[in-house]
Image 1 (spheres, rainbow, N blue to C red):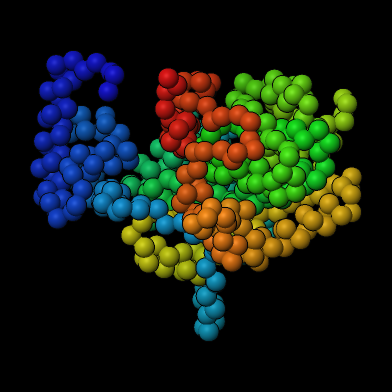
Image 2: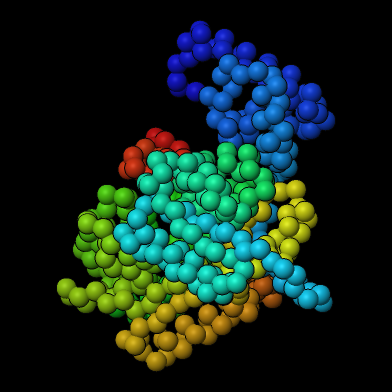
Length: 453
């Protein structure tokens, strides 16, 4: 709203709007609840505003047809259907027919060996190749080798890929446009809380493992000062911070969690700041970025003088995730899932489906390790929820008979508040490094997309 539009730009936009409106109504838009403006925004989200420049009504109508599911999605009050567990695979009573191998593509932003995140996904790709060796062929693609995300997707399809996994959330825009033009290709993007009928998203409930790490940190801290370093405030990240803090509350109500934020240009600033505050345990990210001036530490780490010793490490089991998704595609379960809902299909699986795990160091005391095992087993069997939320009675006391009551998953994903034992704040948009603003603009929690006052 603060950008200046010239008279020519205003006239052009009016022309675009009324041309789109005519095509939209001809398609049947007048039967939908949403406004022309909402439909136009959905269209632009897929194809970009420039796609409407000096094109014929025939071309616009053609593109509206391709993005029709995306336009229809806008009229849904809740646009996202979150799948917390995989469907049980179907058991066929018929013998297998002749089966043509499917090509499954994995897209990486840059060279795999330069990032622990990308290495994890690559290991997952290798695992599914071993599992489905006679049914699929996996291929890796690097965006920097093809010039853009969209070009990389197009190369995957040219090479025969019918299933594509984009391993980073910033690939959303390229994925949408390609998905509209190639509806027979199944496209998945590693992201959370993205409303779209054209693509599907997947992400692990890592907050479950963070809850256990917090509980362990609470038992071991001697200073009652525990550090937590987070990259940026996107969907899911705040839930992980709060789950960690709740774990600390579980075992040590006197301890505080000091929150620091890092960016792409990170050094050891956040780490040094926490150590200076007296933190004897710090929760780092779950993987090593392996690049100059970036953290080499990961997992829940104990600070012992100049030594940093990892005690627990949350694990992203990407191989298990990919195997279960591919299996659901091969047996037709995934198509049934899509048909059952008019909403966007987002996979958000956790410990119960085997995509989240945790490793423990031999340094952990036996009793503390046992605590971790008990909590993890409870999470796997869904008897424990980090975000339990019993109601309060009229006298202000909690109703503990309601112990199974918990925050709903939409509130967990969209969290934009911090637990009371956290010292720190969620950064505003203009406080973020310019390198991460574009990511937060698309996938950041609501408070992080606001300007500071």
